[in-house]
Image 1 (cartoon, rainbow, N blue to C red):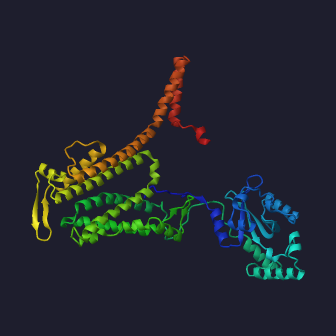
Image 2: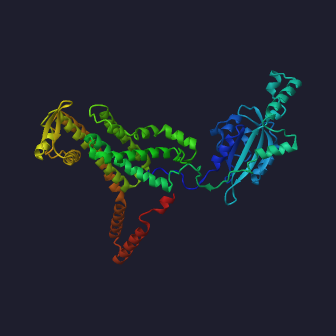
Image 3: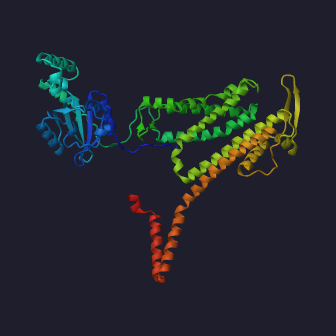
Length: 529
């Protein structure tokens, strides 16, 4: 619908998303991101793979200094010369690759192939450091610790066998470092510079068959769906209450069928339309879009699009399956969910909110009028001649009469026109919703009185809610004017209290009024802070 949540539709920086996506394609690759524009280069992101190989959780890693490259993972065997080279690389914003011995959280030694790559923005300024890690412990000679010497008691032959086994297992994934050619291939595989995602703002990109939910075509289409939704909300209760199955209503059946087809097309489009993710990003992955729609609104939208009118047209039995299909048309009111979920952006505007509340108020009155007519018609069909509908027939001099049918028994015919009955029903519900009514149309039967009691309870809550919001909206719309007059009164009182000369007072008032005209009462310092 128009005004649905647009999300981050302006050009966004998708560097992190691209890095994460590429890292996920290499499960054994982990990385850190550090801020290159803040002292000590604090870590601003680490992926799950790094947490697994280091033993630290993300909360323990974030915001730690990266100046000494994971200094919290240093141990007694960490080479100080390599640490110095790493620090020099960061300080001079260079790109390099190292082998370094670090320690996990449980103090287990870990050989890592580390690559440092500076990330530049569109102004050629280094804004981030990308540190990529690859576990190469299997390619290194096992490291003896004081604990393992006494407990394990491994011989040199066992250590050598274990090292060879690890090397063979790892060789399928990484080339050996001793071969210069393969080492360059490894460096190329580890290096992201050749295909590095650019750190810049990019507009959301979508596949050819995916529509952006804020594009011009979708906006126009959503306005069409909005109008048809309100048409459905008005006509479905009316058709169910007045049971439109006469020959002159064929055109209405055709229109409703066309509306059903349009809503079905909207379901198809929803499978190919982007949506806003939890983080405000525009999601354009077709599989994610389809799964999201199937899990959310698909069932409701599908139920609201079934052609109940077509089924009902072939069965004129008011008491049989045709009556069931006629009642099931109420399910189409589920289409109102489209308005609720896609008009949220307009709720921040007072005038739009006011119009929506008034439309909803009239819509509820229309629904209640249709129910009120159905109750009167049911009582009249049951021979209750003091119901409101029977009294209306007498007042309008359009009395009801009965005809006898061998199939259905006595049938009520004639009576007031459909227009007269609907207008009278709407008049009664509006008077009960806004006041206590005038008594010219009143509840006489038990069914009518029960419904009137329920309607008054609903109307009281609705009246308080809607017009409470109306009061708030009007107050917000006039708050600037009230603030303006309050400021002028304060200035006048100040000048009167301090006996400011008349000429100076006029100049001060002119300054205050002209300043307000330019700033509209906006406090620049408050907004900037």
